Image (cartoon, rainbow, N blue to C red; front, side, top):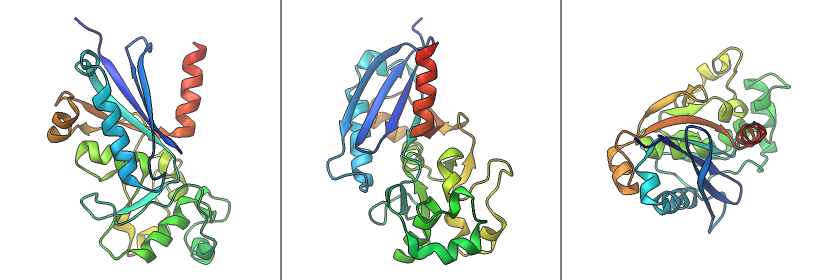
Length: 232
């Protein structure tokens, strides 16, 4: 019997990298692809992922049982409820100082989401740019949603700068009074099971229909975890 293999998808600033590992955490395969039009284009994220997954040797793809996605934690895109982007994403390095007054009304000073360079400031900007109903998703959460065919979920680490509290396990109380509250994801812990890959996506990518999609983390956290693994 073959070892069960897992797939990691890293959505970075300039491109995407994939890695296949076995149960002993040995790296069996890796490859990368740069974005064509840049970090602000969700279509680039998706095309890079599809290209790289389909290029994994068939004998390795046939043994994959689960995958997880990490991404730049502040890159945010507004989508319709079915996950279709309504325009370009706002990358993590875009500040929105015009949102400072609103931020002060929503979150206490000093919180990760209180900064004009945080995801919440970008979310408020996207909400002004697009009509509702819409959903707001970070880069890794959007790709995980595409794989599932279900964009309900968001991973905890990716959403700290949007306002999610790890200690309280909830969004700020002020969010509950906002008409855009339903645009936020249903938060899941890193490493938790989000669901089984959408059957049509699995067929398109040449993966098992039993493939599990696991909540990943931020690209920074993934780098730390990789460093720890290399030291073992």
